[in-house]
Image (tube, rainbow, N blue to C red; front, top):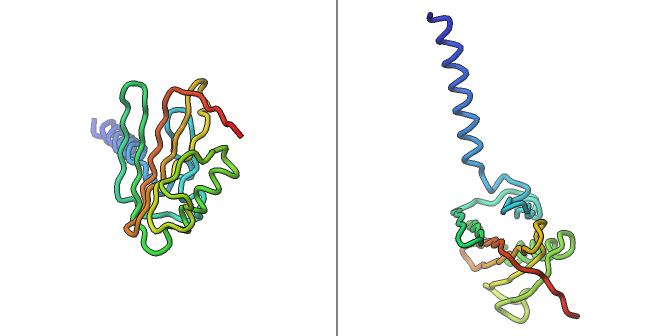
Length: 151
């Protein structure tokens, strides 16, 4: 009987460990952050190194999905966020659509928004970057809508 219970116990411990690691996925280590069927490049992928995640939340309400990731950073948030926003625009199909300041590059704290079409039809993804001397917050919002660019 003991010979049967030991292998079962080992399998259960391994299964619990695997499920636990999948459920507590560390956003700081991810290359892409999933929101719906969309995968958005992470700060780690663009900047090239992990950043300390100080908070994370997700919410789905009335067909709108929102994911918020807060990072603790000291020193060069402005440069990192400029690089992040520029890379999203240059390589990943995001468009700038609103800034809290006229010249994002010259601000000491800012709110910047980018938008792109979702991989799901009739949906868009909005990415908001909010930063100050204490760090930055990336807010991803996926909702129903279409993107029209006027030049």
